[in-house]
Structure formats: structure tokens, C-alpha cells
Image 1 (cartoon, helix red, strand yellow):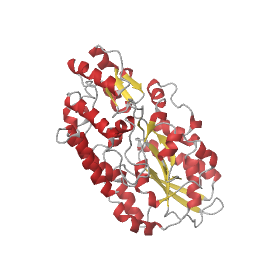
Image 2 (spheres, helix red, strand yellow):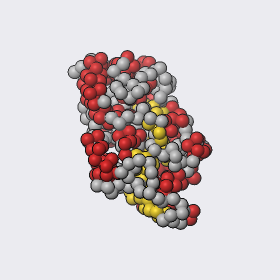
Image 3 (cartoon, rainbow, N blue to C red):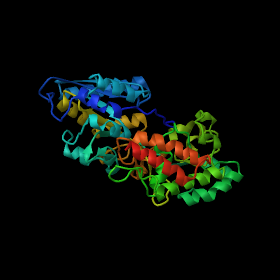
Image 4 (cartoon, rainbow, N blue to C red):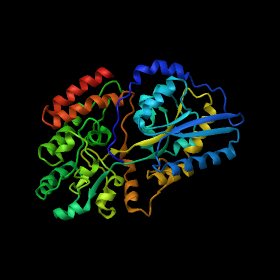
Length: 415
């Protein structure tokens, strides 16, 4: 998992046309268990090995067919690149899938084109979801997706760096990190890293600090932003202390170099919340990876994504699509999917998947401390105006207060 990048997609401008192309309402033209129906699902390379990924879904389709002989399911695996553009174009042309894999900020962006799943999923299946996972796919009280995996970006530290610096106490709070920063700097290490280039997602960089300070991106009603409050100022001031003190790699404030060129890969960074074990295992060695709860200021909270299966309103076989989603999101299916892809369970009944793996079992223990923040239709656009302002503060062009105020003004205009 590398630092995720994305290009904003002009979905909002197309909403009216897309809704027309999709059709509307929650009615269904057929496709129940007793009727012939065809369901198409679009998914992406969650399992990186294409052959293994294809084989997994072929196996699930075969198993589903035994109890649903009249429903044909076609799973199409598309590349991650330009996935939103491809989906938008397909929906506009009336050729969108019945079911598609989406993450939370995509659920917010496409919400007007998504059929809520509340009436399609059994009550026990909905109750089985972890509370923070269910919240991650719920907008205006409606479940927009059936989660099939989760992730976590807790605090991850390099034991080798601590040993070489002669430091034995790992940080738990912001104050701990700031206190350790000059000690690591004196030994030639960065205490952490921070990607301020606007191409890097704020989900893994600034937002965790905002949540840790007790703040949020949006107001509770979602009608305006809240990141410019005292919590946001405190979070950005904390980052500026790290940048001004020379405690983070300066290059990362203005660019995203190849990972191999970063101090994280060079074993020169003590701790990070912007990477996960899969990123660093080759460079650090598994024995040096130490997992801890997310850093704490007002509270301990980190980012964790949720991958879910969503149904589009344009589907003409909603009942059949709902039965497929119910099948594909049950723990017997998702647990196998999660272990093959290195992700974590979304349901309580799945239990612990990595008991014999010290790194992943430690990651599992942090899942309850993760969030994706509130879903909002304009999440991506707001991130697009906030990220450059955060960078401006960190490179000394604006104060934290001015940067967040300017970003709020632009973001509220979008909302």
C-alpha cells in the first residue's frame, strides 16, 4: 500500500444526467430467486495477483449458483487507475454494473446513484458489522454499501531506529512525539514523516491528527466544514512544529518521491502513521515492525478504509443483486477474501484472522480505533482545496490559522 493519490472527478456536474441514465426509485423489475436474472459486479485488484483474484471470485460465483440456480453472476475486475471516470462514463451511458466495489468517500460522491441496502440485507447481517465499520458506509441513516474488508493505519515504529538512537520508550501522544523529536534528530533520524504534496490523500496524513485533536472535517449536519476550528488549528500547529524543527523529511512537504528514496525506506524514520507493514516490510524487516494504537491528543484514533459492495439504482435486477451482495458479504466469504488480500474483518463474528501473525494480530487490535470520518458528497472536492493550504502553512507561506480559514472559505463555497 503506497501513499494513495487521486484526481478529482467532476461527478457533481453530471448528477442529473446520470440519475436519468440510471433510472430512479427503489423498485425492482425482477430478479428474485425464482426468476432468471443476471447480475454484473465490478471490482478492482484487491488481491494483487490477477489469477488468484479471478479464481477467488469464480469460486464464489459457483458456490452462489448452487443455491441460486436462476441467477447468473458476472464479476469483472478493472484496474484501480481511472476507476471513477470509468464508472461515471458507464453509468451515464446506461451501461453501469449492478454491483460495484466502493470505498467510503466514493459512497459519498456517488450516493445519489446508489440504492441503499437496508431492505436487502438480513437484520442479523447488518447487526454483525463492527459499529465503526457500519458508520463508515452510512449516510443520512442509510447503508450505502455492504462492507467486505477493513484496514488500519495505526502508529507503526521501526525498532531498529529506536535501538540505534538508544531510545527505548515508544510514543503514545503528540507530546511524546515532540519530546522525542530532537533526540532522534541528534542521532540523524526523523521522528516521523509527513506527505504535504496535495496529491497525497489527507485521509492518511492530516485527518487523523484532526480527529485526534477532537475535531472533524465537516459539521454534524454536513452543510459546512469544521476543520478550521481550534482542533484543526491545533493539529496543523503540531505539524508545523515538526516541519519547522526539521523533524520530518523536507522533500516530502513539496513532492512524493519514489518510496525507495524516502527516509522511511532508508530506515531513517522512527514512527509513521502514513504507511502500513506491507509498505515497509522489505525495507525494515518484519522483526523491526512494531504496531501501536494511533497517537493520542484528545483521543486515540486513526484512519482505516472500508471496502464495500454497493448496488446502483440503475440495476434492473435489484432483488438478485441484493441476494448476491448478501452472499458475498457473509463472513465465510469475506474472511477468505481478507486473508488472501491482507485486509481485516468487517464483522464481529469473523473473529481474529491473524492469531499466528504477530504484526497483523497487532493491527487487528487497532481496528476499533479507526474511522473514515463523516461521509459527504463533497469529500474529495473539500480535500482538494484543503491540501494546498496545509502545504502552504508547512512551508511557511501562511500561518495555520490563515491557511485553514482560506481553505474553509473555498470549501464552504463548494458545499
